Length: 321
Image 1: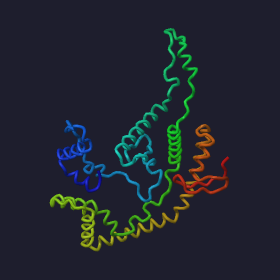
Image 2: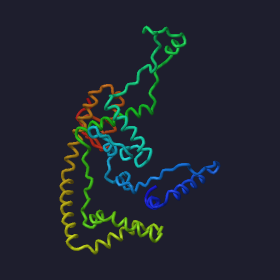
Image 3: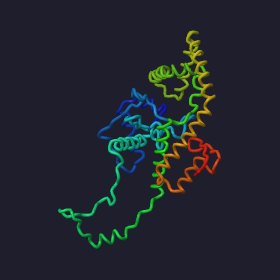
Image 4: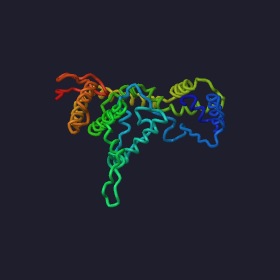
C-alpha cells in the first residue's frame, strides 16, 4: 500500500482496517470460511519517526551496485532492511531476506566460515574409539554414490555470491563508483524552497482533506498549490538567500561534472586491478569458461581493447593473461 491509500489508512481506526482486510480475504477465498482474526497488529509506517513512510526506489541516476553498497558493513555495524536487498527491494520479504543475510555476516565475522562436514553424519565408532564395521548395505550405498553435479540454480548462486564478494572487496578498498548524482540538484531557487516546505504543506493538505472528508485525487496538486502560495508571500530576503544558495550549487555541480570522467576512468582502472588480484589469489574460484564469461560481461573481449560500459562500470584491460 502506498500513495493516497497509505495516507488514508494511517488515519483509519484499527477495527475498520481489520474489517476491511477480512472482507477482502473473504472475497478472494469464497469457498473458505474466513473468520475474524483473534489478534491483530496494525503498524503505521508514516508515523514512524525514523521512517516517515519511506521506502527505497530506483532513481534516474541509480547504479546497479547501489543496493549492495547500502548493505556493506561499517566495522562491526551491519545493515539490513529492504533498501539493502537488490533482489527484492521495497518489499517485506526483501527486508526479511536482508535480515538473514546480516545475521549470517555477523556469525561469520565472529566464528569464521562454517564448513559443512562430509559426510554429514560420520560413521559409527565403538566406545574405545575404533570404527565399527560397515554393513554390506552401507558399503554398497557408498560405493554406488557418485558426486552430485551442480545444478544451474546452485551455479548461479555460487557465481552471484562470488561477484558480490568481489564487489565488496572493490568497494572496501576504493569505495563505490563515482557518480553524477545531484548534478542538477539545487539549481533552481523555487525547487529548493519546495524541498524545504514540502512536508509542512503536506501536513496542512492532509489536515484539510480529513476535515472536509475529501477523497479526491488532488492531494499532490493541493500540496504544490500551497507551496506556490507560500513562495509568493515570502519576503525578498528569503528568496535572495535561496538564489545565492542556487549559485553555489550550480558552481559545485559544474566542478563535479568537469572532473567526473577523469574520476570514473581512474576508478574503473583501479577496480580492474583489484578484481584481477582477487582472482589471482583464488585460482580455483572460477573455471576457465566461467572466467571468460565474466570478462565478456564486463566488456573485455580481446587484448588491448577498451571495454564497453557493462555490469555497472567500464573496464580497460591490457592483457587477458
